Image (tube, rainbow, N blue to C red):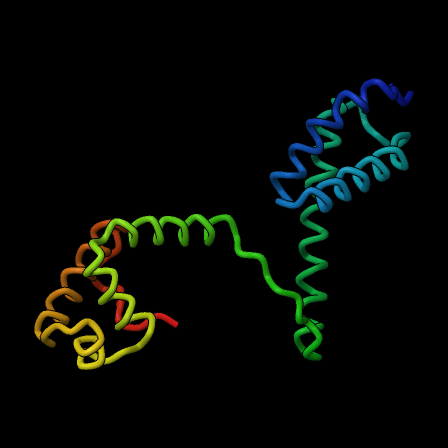
Length: 168
């Protein structure tokens, strides 16, 4: 059991890389995780108990991922304390999905509603400025804005408590 079988390890590499990709969400980070996992596995091969190879390797890979995340957070806090952390943060998958869903819902609004909503909430124009820009009465701006906010909330499933007054 303590003998290293290259074929067994090679056979598990695609599964390990797939798992690492799901964890890290970055190909190069996933490759690094798999490489570190294999290094640790090979260096600790003789101390391995009589457990199945695949779960053992997956647990090494997962623990390495968690350790790397903890280490990155510690270093990030230290860099933040000294003002050296200027790395742009990638949005999470959830944030990306939420943004795409919001844009898809926004596209479903009528042209009139989109125009008023953009001018007031994104550009920060007053009702008077919006009315002048669109050459419509201020009451029409207010009613279109109200209908646009209501329609957007219905499309996104947001509750009425969320404010769509100003986005910046």
